[in-house]
Image (cartoon, rainbow, N blue to C red; front, side):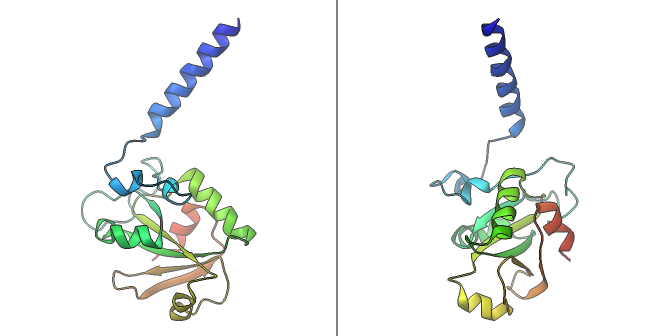
Length: 161
């Protein structure tokens, strides 16, 4: 009886892992581990598949640190880029971080985690006065939209223009 339960758990785990699509052509996604780097993921094909890249298939959604975004900037062209002004001490920021890390982001959406406490110049540039603020930017970094309060990737995408 016990071996049957173990086999059932092993089979369910193997099935779940095979459905995750954990392979990645993005070398940065397999670089040194970090909480944000491990959050880079995609959502199911039917979630947000029409958003994002203007030509051809959308790029997978990604949740990146500022350094990762700068290193991958050309690979993220054609996606909707949103800066997430995050503070580790902020409960709503932690909720968004957990939701995005667990559920991923819709295809065509790049979420860039910006440290609210240390990125003072960037806060001034975009007029950010509170943490848990999102700013969608164009390829040149000009503000397209600004809002607060989103939790999930779908919530974030719904606010983009």
